[in-house]
Amino acid sequence: MTENIFLPGIPTALKKPEKIQEYLDSTKYNASKCTRSPLLVYQLKEAHCFEGAMFAAACLEQAGFQPLILDMIAEDDDDHVIAVYKIYNCWGAVAKSNFTTLRYREPVYRSLRELVMSYFDFYFNTNGFKSLRTYSRPVNLHRFDYLNWRTTDKDLDSIGQYLNLVPHYPLLTNNQIQLLAPATPSLLSSALMGSNPEGLFVPGTKKDSVTN
Image (cartoon, rainbow, N blue to C red; front, side, top):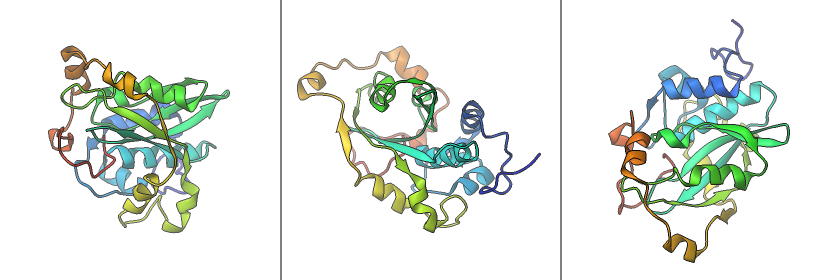
């Protein structure tokens, strides 16, 4: 089997979005704060959401897509990063998450806001509090080619810091936030199926990472 140009050792079978998602679902959830390159993710078979998004973006790049990631900011919860792509003028996403509900999305969403809102009812902390609040414009990882982000052995936390600086767009008004009902116990339990407890955000603590 041939290999990807930018990701030596990674099979080209990981070009289709659903196959990339299948691979990410098979990896262990990384509970550490380091941010590894896509090559290290593949070699270690371990990733958190930010690493998973960069891995997916790198694989999608091999299929002719731009390597785009999008940041979601949450209240009293971890933020989340996804890789986004467009087919027939509609957006889809590939993602790694400790929550089963925050992963793959088919390319059927006509706008980025519509795509992000598909996560809303399924984005909650371990208390069931629905936490998603804002989302960023897509960030093209080509701007970080000077860091050799696809293959480096160095920590890529600086890319995460950049995500905090790009414009984010609100999803809800304050009045809407006040009306939110918590996730049901059955939805919460299904979302946490197979999760790594060490990587779960503890509500009420300081948020310092983008690793939902």
